[in-house]
Amino acid sequence: MNKREFEQLQHENAKLIILDVRDVEKYQSGSLHVPGIATKNVPYIHMKEQDQALPEETAQACADATIITLCTSGNKAQKAAALLREKGYRASALEGGLTAWHADGMQSE
Image 1 (cartoon, rainbow, N blue to C red):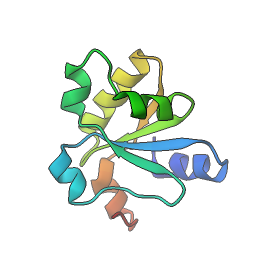
Image 2: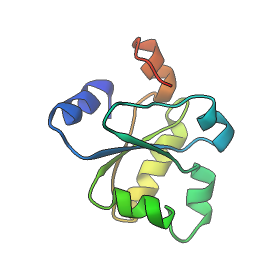
Image 3: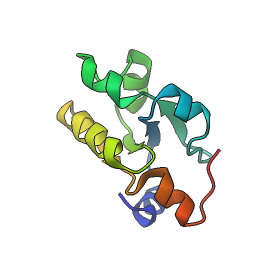
């Protein structure tokens, strides 16, 4: 999913959840926080090692939402989105990750 597609979903008031799949330390150093959209951190390494890809609370929040996965460059986010789709979730990766987001002049926290 590119930036334009992300913005389109925002304007359509789609239920979105941003899932930062980087490790906890990187997440805590700054992630993508968009007003009105929940951002959660579930490291990809944990997703692929567990039978259940998402912790129960996160899974419930994501059940009827479109999940936007992100990482630094987009590689882990692509893998995480594919894993989530295999588990029945609607998931897409943010193309280029936070690097591309910042290159477009967009802010993150």
